[in-house]
Amino acid sequence: MTDRTNRTALFRLLLIVGAGLAAAVVTGVTKVVLVVAAIILMIMLHELGHFLTAKWAGMKVTEYFLGFGPRLWSIRKGETEYGVKAIPVGGYVKIVGMSNIEPVDPADEPRTYRAKPYWRRLSVAVAGSTVHMLLAFLLLYVLFTVVGTVDYDRELPQIGTISRLEEGPSPAQRAGFRVGDRLLAYDGTPFVEWDGLRTHIRARPGQTIRFEVERDGVPRTITVTPVDLSQVEVEGGGPVVEGDRPYGFVGIGPRFPVEKAGPVEAVPKTVAGIGRGVVETVKALGRIFSPDGVSRYTEELTGERGRTEIDPDTPRFLSPVGFVRVADQAANQGWRAVLVLLVSINLFVGVFNMVPLLPLDGGHVAIATYEKLRSRPGRPYRVDVRKVLPVAYAVFLVLVFIGVTSIYLDIVRPAANPFE
Image (cartoon, rainbow, N blue to C red; front, side, top):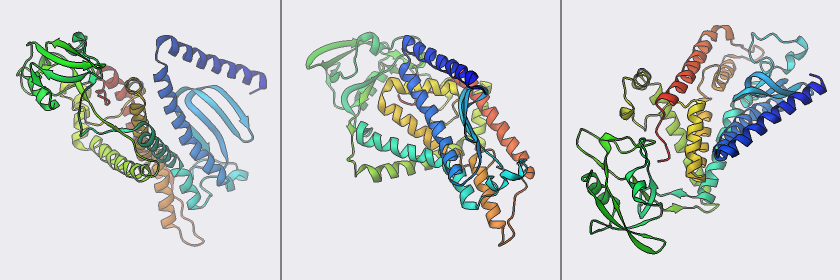
């Protein structure tokens, strides 16, 4: 690519990015764009981990790209081409000689991935997931020390959330409740705990309830009429209604206290949080690919499982469409939700990427480890990758299937808002 062509391509890329940012400002979705940009940055840091460890090991790296598809812009520095492609749903680093079937110039053979010692290949293969774990640790540490975490075991006598119905404003919105209102009494009963209020509302769909609240130090009265939750849907999900009996719903939720940890105290707390996150991610993957999980997913795809029957706690993959929606929901909730989302993404990608199957990085770890175990002094063993290609193709097709069907579900049956 000539210098003139390269400058033209760079100008075109900057024009596209500038137009996108301008559109984000005009449409009021700047926060969402920033969250999505953070996710893209995490992708490139993953690839940077592979890139740096490969360079450190003396391997030949020929490409470092964000995205797939048509090339928008690139520049060559030394033996490596850096650039951006049109579809920013991932990234990649191209290292020569990743398998025994890849043709390589004999002059480059000593610098191939396959020619390096086991620990060098292992370091390159696990680098991406290691970066995700480090990012998760850093983000979770910031969450604990700077932003603070919510103690959901303690409900404060204040309104912390106000829901909206799919059909329009909720009774709470129409009545004029605001986040931060302090609850004093309802229908003459002094407010003591949220369970008592929930029971009172649940039993009175269509009946007026008189609330006494305090706002900015000033007492006021708010009158609201609960709707029957069995006849409406809450935006982003809501309480599960069992049976056909009426179920009163107003749309207010409690506020919970926020607690921050000290810089030293937060270290073991963060380590424990990462450990729990890894365990939960492994369990979630197990549920997704279990016979029951596959059956549930099939029912969602075919429509046999209605939207109201879908368990909001059932894990499922999100497409780029779903990621944008969840990013929007997180951005609207604030920094805490954004950090939780980014930590969750890093943990999931870090764990999932280590599944010991090609084309995932865990597949390269498995092959390198198997070769190490089978090798003898002076007789290195090399796996014939041709024999595992059918498995790699099958995994690739499963990933494509999940990607396509996730887009369909995120459009037709979007997942419940995880931050409500």
